[in-house]
Amino acid sequence: MSRASERAYNNIRSMILSGELQPGSQIREEALAELCGVSRTPVRDSLRRLEAEMFIRRNDSQRSFVADWSLDDLEDAFQLRAMLEAHAAKRAASRISREQLGRLRYHNAQLKQAIDIPNPDVPKFLDHNRQFHAIIVAAAASERLASMLGQVTEQPVVLRTARQYDLENLRRSHHDHDELLIAFDKRDGEWAAAVMTGHIRRAFHAYAEAHSTDTEIRKSNLAA
Amino acid sequence: MSRASERAYNNIRSMILSGELQPGSQIREEALAELCGVSRTPVRDSLRRLEAEMFIRRNDSQRSFVADWSLDDLEDAFQLRAMLEAHAAKRAASRISREQLGRLRYHNAQLKQAIDIPNPDVPKFLDHNRQFHAIIVAAAASERLASMLGQVTEQPVVLRTARQYDLENLRRSHHDHDELLIAFDKRDGEWAAAVMTGHIRRAFHAYAEAHSTDTEIRKSNLAA
DNA sequence: TGGCAGCTTATTGTATACAAATGGCATTCG
DNA sequence: CGAATGCCATTTGTATACAATAAGCTGCCA
Picture 1 (cartoon, chains in turn brown, purple, red, blue):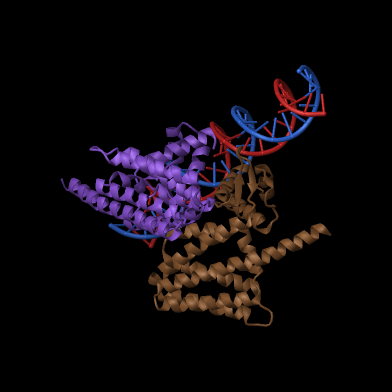
Picture 2 (tube, rainbow over the protein chains, first blue to last red):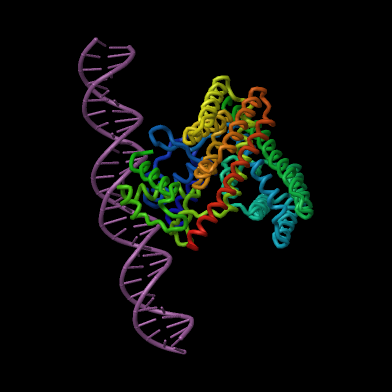
């Protein structure tokens, strides 16, 4: 993707992810164009992409709004993600190369390092976690599957989820990865898929709990 | 979507589906713009959409080509479709309304009529088949799932597939629908999902067989 | 006062001109 | 003769002007 267009896309996307553009708020092409320092043309391209990825919704008269996710929407996304990622794990089990397995082990070791210290390095954990999953998706060798997973993995809230993992959850997450590695080693697709399903579903519940606390906090703030 | 943009999208899409634009051939925005009687702007919009839907691929330097599907790609698409549509059936089983069930029965009756005559009415069959599946997806009540299914259901070859169903396959297809109706009636999601999986996988193999015959015909044409 | 008609303004859609980048061809040099 | 390089043609990317459409407001009439 070309320079202006890519810049616009990344800018807008990160503004949505960070919450800078509030869920439900209207989006005007020209305003974004100024913010990104480009013309409306690449902004429009970006909006179309973001709409396809469901970061943005449009009403009947073509006006754009930042998507606002209910807990149900979120569970839906997680459910699809669990199914797709389990499928990816299953495919990967019979296709993964020695070299990919090695990289998987490397990232998992880094993950372990990130949490096996007094003060866990969460960003480091997240980064290696992302790469770990990316390798599995690549090993699954289905472009289509990868593209679909892209649509459900980096939802606004999904990103924020991991930050809310407590240490216990991070450890379990790491443990799942260990088990995935063994399943891959034994080329047991069913096992890999099962582990992955649980792995993603835990992530959802970790979020749901954090979210309800969050909501309560917000409520009490409003009350104050 | 607005007039020019929608026209461009539909035109280009149907040109791809019909084979008028040959798989693998390069696409030039200006040429399409002339063909559709619009400017490049809406054509570009359409190309982006079609690229996301994987009807079109782009090389490193942003040139567009009509997607060319290998049998493997196709099996991949069918596999994903089977998984997603089974998931839809499962969800639908616990959510479908009496009214939707009624419409399902109606379309299935029409399906039966279309093939229970000396000369089967294939277009009629296809139309009611499409609506039957659409109702299930709607009953699943997941926008995201619906959007993903859209990406794997109307691939160029998928469309041509059904035309190659022989009567026996059409009958089995209708029988699957009957069974789905019972599963829905009993709110048995697992059953519905299982039937749906088989239903879609049969479609794939029906295509694969027709395709190999097809290829042989093409080869002998070349030889002649 | 409530609601509707018509106008005004805000926002998106389309066309077009121009800029940037890419590919292909020809020429030249080793 | 082959490969590399520079130029030209083709194609895509971006900006901008203008057109179309929808929303909001104002004032009129019931």
